Image (cartoon, rainbow, N blue to C red; front, side):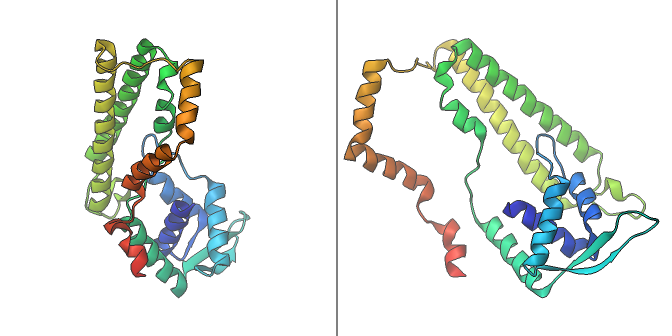
Length: 235
């Protein structure tokens, strides 16, 4: 994945010369509640691929105290150029989030209103717990680097990113609570799946040219090239 590639490349650039174990230790410290960890296998695979692509290079391979040999890496000139390109491209792009909740909610009508409301309230509860965990972490860290207290250091730009994440979680949780309330009050009616006759009618509608045109118009809201894509066109 491009994210693992960028993370590993960036950490070799920042910490290099560095071996994979320290890259893994640093990435572990970047984890947030609810965010999957990047496994050791993915990190070492990325190091090998980046080396094969000429973006990083091996400095040395050595063993200390009969421990398994560790390979030390540093970024190359080509790697620096690719790193700079990736950072700018990914900050510029506004990508669609691949959230499994969106897919599952498409079929929410197979559940009862009571179960839907309960699931939404549970989701809100988990999201608020994550907000609380990150807020406590921010309170326990400092934006300034002090020798001897490295573990408590969290740079200002990382603190701002965590604030963005808690804002997103809060918004999601509030939507869940609001939607659960609408379901319970009857304001949002989750109708049952169509019967056989309705399904047959819908299949015919899907085949029509008008349906295809309206679908294309709807997708253009998200897919139409706009200012956010001009970075790629200008390269």
